Length: 199
Length: 199
Image 1: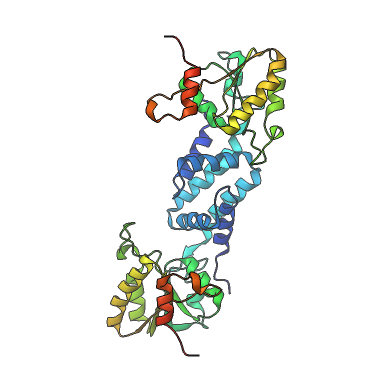
Image 2: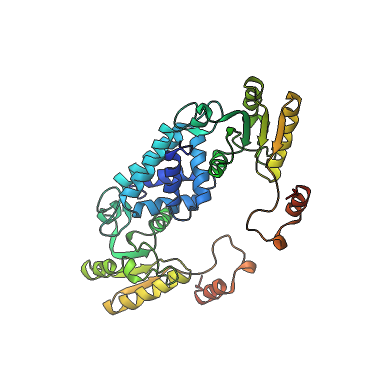
């Protein structure tokens, strides 16, 4: 006789396959759904299927998109001489919210991280170099995260891009808006002094 | 122009609705599925739908089951004079693995916890009392967890069950197998002394 319902065991297993979800969390999520209204399970399952069906990556910039190439890459209003390089699709969304940037993007899908075993080959770097060579790009803005992995990736890319004779820039580092000088860490403060501007 | 794919935002939102999944984790899971093979998403979605469709709670003992009443409640081999009271369906599975217990179960679906706002009314306590009164039960084994909430629940149940004139027992507390006396906490050791048995 079986006293463990097989569908329950299977869902625990499926949740457990997701990154950062241990066996205990997988059990907790499964039993939560078991007790929650059936609508929530249906909405979650549909959202998963719907996303995989409708969303792909742009074959040019590797941002998420429902049409390939994406709306940014095909827009006639965008400046095609600039490429802003980011780690994740979410970074594109964050930059778009500023309405400050009108060029194109290139999503690397990660950053170089020897600890996690992510080397340059795991990222969309060769595709970036091809775009720069082919599309008459004049400036590449390196907008990887200002942390260890992001800095390493930016330095690596800068070394590859410089020989191509284009302008390579990096997002400004400094004090974030609304912050308190007293609590700023030394590195941020040092960068803010180095990058000071006349006013 | 929309540069955020709506299906992505919706899945992030759905993951975020699950308990213990914050916005960052929801994003991480969503982008993981976006990059993972389509099979994994399909299997996860199917497992969710399948579980909700096939698994319910037994109307007698509230254990998870694909048939109602469950296989334990309907089994002619089980001792119907004993009910083992547990907090979660997983506890039933743990006890079944021991092959030591041959009676019936009753799943409370939680434990009394004033901190989390779970009172006796949120648990399947009235249903337990009804079963005890109706089904000629002779012994109720309180197998709630040996922690604060589980102990409180056991004490609360014992007070309700004693007037019904049945035997009320609690799982033995003591040193777990394979443990080291030197590292046992005082309460466990005290219980082990109190519960010592002749050999």
